[in-house]
Amino acid sequence: MIKEIMEFLSGVKMTIISAVFLCFSLGFMLYGIKPLVNPALVTVLISGVPIIYKAFNKLIYCRMISSPLLITIAMIAAISIGELFAAGEVALIIAIGELLEETTIKKAKRGLGRLLSLTPTTARKILANGSDEVLPLSAIHPDDILRVLPGETIPVDGVIVRGNSSVNQAALTGESLPVDKECGDEVMAGTINCFGTIEIKTLNIKDTYLQKMISLVNQAQAKKAPTQRIVDKWAAILVPAALVLAILTYFVTHEIIRAVTVLVVFCPCALVLATPTSIMAAIGQAAKYGVLIKSGEALEEMGKINIAAFDKTGTLSSGKICISDIFSVEDVSTKELLKLAASIEQYSEHILAKTIVSSAKNEKIALEKVDDFQMIAGRGVSGMMNGVPLMAGNLKYILETGATGNASFLNKIKKLQQDGKAIVVIAYNGVLCGVIAFCDEIRMTGKQVVNDLKEMDIKSVILTGDNQASAMYFAKRADITEVYADLLPEGKVCEIEKLIKDGNKVCMIGDGVNDAAALKTANVGIAMGSMGSDIAIESADITLINDNISSLPYLKKLSLATIKTIKTNISISMILNFIGISLSVYGILTPVTGAIMHNLGSVLVVLNAARLYDKKL
Image (cartoon, rainbow, N blue to C red):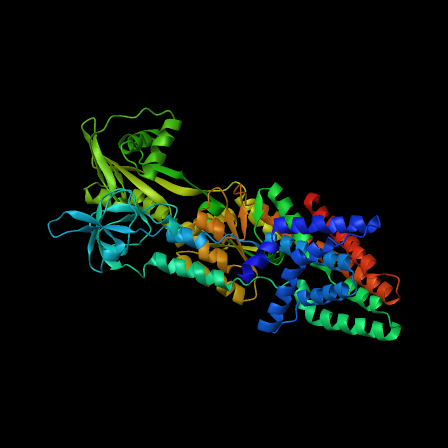
């Protein structure tokens, strides 16, 4: 109950009310009006009580001398000699500083819930009579046989016992293409069955791969401790120093007002504002460039980064599948091959089929009608065109139908597979006549960003769930030499932990659910805004709203500029504090003028921080 009251008093609305009453107090003081009750008392109650509560809470329960303790001592001293305005002014400035800081470090907490929502709550269990019944997942047991229809989410980890299909595993593994699955292949909870109906034998229900991912994100999030405030780091020195100096001042001068003034001036008002105002200005500038920064800690850490770890699909790549190669036999032209492939694939919903048909339409190729169309999910399609058998699919399927091809052509297919490309082989009238290969498009700015980062002494690496061949082929195009492929989410986390353990500062750039734990584990997690999944965006410290990875070098420069501004602000506040304390000891400042000097320091700090908003980098 007490904690809720303190949070309410520290909120934006109550802080505004506190400021209004302090302004009334200042007005009365300037015009010589002596009200029955000084309005500054309301300011002390609203803004000061939470500070007093925090000071004693840390002192009693944490055995910690904190900056709120110094502020509490100064407020009590000022109140004891009737200087309510000075006490209220100090309390308000500190309250505003903490409010700004809280705004900059507030992070979304919905990410884990979004990840949990991927877990299906029901499953289609096959009964003894061959029919199926939709049951709650809690009613499913190991070794149960489940039926998964096209378009449905696979509810458990299991192994296929009947049927073939293609499964979209992008959410968990980051693979850019659906993976063909047949009898004996394992499937994971949370992935999507794209085409054929499959029956799976249940392996894991509670301890699924998806649940392990949720655990990874949870553990990684727990490791992200908030940065300790600069003022708190110095509190153990500031509090005793202030008390000793105030006591000495009193014993030397025998004037309690001078001693109280020392305590008031010693309060680190400008110092409290130095960091949050700079960070808020930087966050505001970043937003103008389509970059959302969630915390000051992330902004500060970005300046120390020396390794940029990229997920491949949807990050360095556009996430769009394109045709990379078309090979045909000598007596078939490329255009004729595309016509054959598009004619048979026009009846399929597979992503590769749609890419082929779209390419043919762009080339303005007229498609032929195909009769007796059949699709074997996860393998290929077949039909009759002009009375002649026409097939398209993976090489294994085509060869199983009895189609033949020369050794040279088969070697070309093998080379494409070694490059990690997805392929569709076309056979017409029982003869292999061509192959179409696909790959993920690299972003236009990808290679340039990698080179820009290299000039800033930041090494780029790729962490991907794709196979080694595909990853290496892509890395060459992006001018990246270090690649970690075939990584499941825990593999990405492990590699990032190794890099950090070796003394590196790592930022992870990703877009998928499978990147969430890695984004949390890295020193800085950066998510793609428009293409990224909700869980990736909410797990990240920074979001590129427009998916513009060319913002990465800009972020590094912004971080360095922010750190420089913070250090300048701290210097300003310390110099003003020294001057104020000296003037207080000599009796030149009173508690009220000392409090006003805080405002001068705070204004200078805020103005210097505001320069970041329009600073050119």
